[in-house]
Image (tube, rainbow, N blue to C red):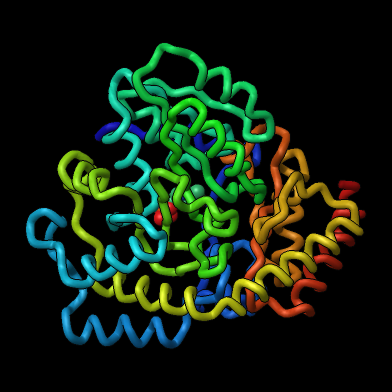
Length: 389
Ligand SMILES: Cc1ncc(COP(=O)(O)O)c(C=O)c1O
């Protein structure tokens, strides 16, 4: 028997540095109030922004699909795992994003992996915002192309990289709303730069889709830029509260991914029930803008409260509100104290965020009540005063 002592030693190092991660277990449906070990707690770190995770219409559509089609798709998409549900989902999301075509992947992780490992070629370069999600960074590392990073709040380095004559094609990849900082990418300027330097712009709308834009198509829609984005990546595990991700673009891109993207080709296709959940969520997202308005109201309310208290929320303007604490231990301590007061806010620590910027990542939901938002702000104020943050 081999020994796993080498892993144990690394885990001990994590414990000593207050960096060990352990999931808590939720034993109720996902909604603003959940139960943990039978105790009700208000959830402030879920991506269930529009509170669709336990929506009755989604549950009913999933039940109906399972009754009629069973659960498993039992094959990869190119064998016999493509069912009418996948086609329907792809058609509807292509039209939602006003693109020629869309392709459905089992997760946002595999969508980013597929796009960046298949499309950029060996003489190309991928330019990543430093705040981009791990799935984008790892995909760029695995790609045949070179990659460099730039700062989204100072695009001069990006422009210098774009001006270099060394590569055949340049791909700019950004999130629209950054998952750990809650700030928005400067999509308008990125579009200007991509046009000036003839680059390809890829935008991951994971935290904006459903939440922003007239019909919920994301930040690009809110800014009137959808037609300028070459490839939109829309993970559906967050506001859509389903699973999987859509890649929306030109038909050539879809056809190429179908033929060349290994994370698409060599994996079991998502269950038709997952497609039904996403399609029902799409109907709700399109037709119930009041959810987005309520999310925005709650967001503004909490930002105001935090500003008055003097918390450091970086440049967030959105429903993702980081409260920067600094060291990992204090962040974990504050998270534990909030938990004891029945408020769930997790501490985000390195390597997810830079050393010295450990934070509480608060995410707002459309159905949080004012009383719940007040409870969070007041409790956090008391705890931070005592912890001298
Ligand atoms: C910006 C971004 N892209 C991609 C992903 C991955 O999506 P999924 O959870 O569907 O794999 C996430 C979230 O985890 C994310 O925040």
